[in-house]
Length: 183
Image (tube, rainbow, N blue to C red; front, top):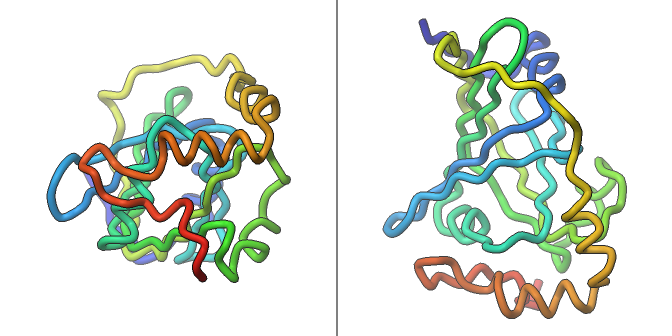
C-alpha cells in the first residue's frame, strides 16, 4: 500500500542514503519522457524538502532541458536487498550550470570531480513509499570507474568540446543551454 508524506523524514533519509542507485524521471510538455539511472556519491539531502544531485557529463542532457522548460522531476529509490521498499520524491527542480551564481554553493556539498556538468536542486512536494515486493534482489558489487577515468582523461577543455557535440540539444531538438555563457 502506498503511503504519502509532505516531506522527507529520518527513516526516508536513512533509506535513501543506503541505496547505491537512484533513477531520475523528467519530461517536457511534448516529446520523449526521460528516465536516467544515477549512482556514485551524487545525491544529497539538504533539508526535509530540498535535495541536490550532481550530474556528470553523459551521452545526452535531456533532464536539463526538461527542468528548464517546466521544472517537473521525480526521483526514485529502490531497495534491491533486505526489506523491499520503493521511495519516490516528486517536485520541481532547478538546473544550476557552472556559469550560475549558485554553482559554488552547491559544489560545496560534493567532492570536486572531473566531468561535473551541472547540479539539480529539487524542492520536494511529495514523498511516496510503496512495498517494492515486485522488485528483484541484486547484490551490489561496486562503482564503475569508467566515467571518472574518461572525464579525467578528457580534461575540462575536452569535456566542453564533448558538450558542444553531444549535450547542447535533446533528442527532441530542444536547447539545453549547457554552453550558454550568459548569467
